[in-house]
Image (cartoon, rainbow, N blue to C red; front, side):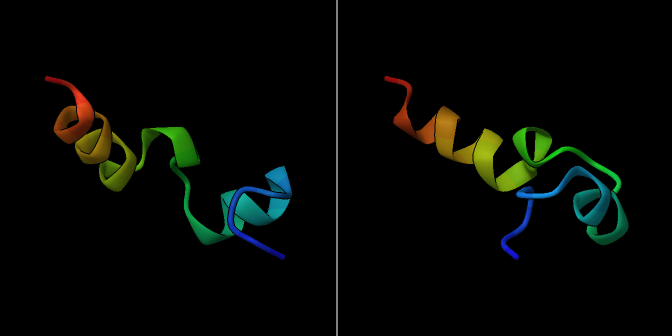
Length: 33
């Protein structure tokens, strides 16, 4: 099961939602001109 596929599993793995992950935030900042 990939991270974030199952809400319950996602909570057990990481209390923070996948969309709030630093990696995704940094990627969005890098992709923003």
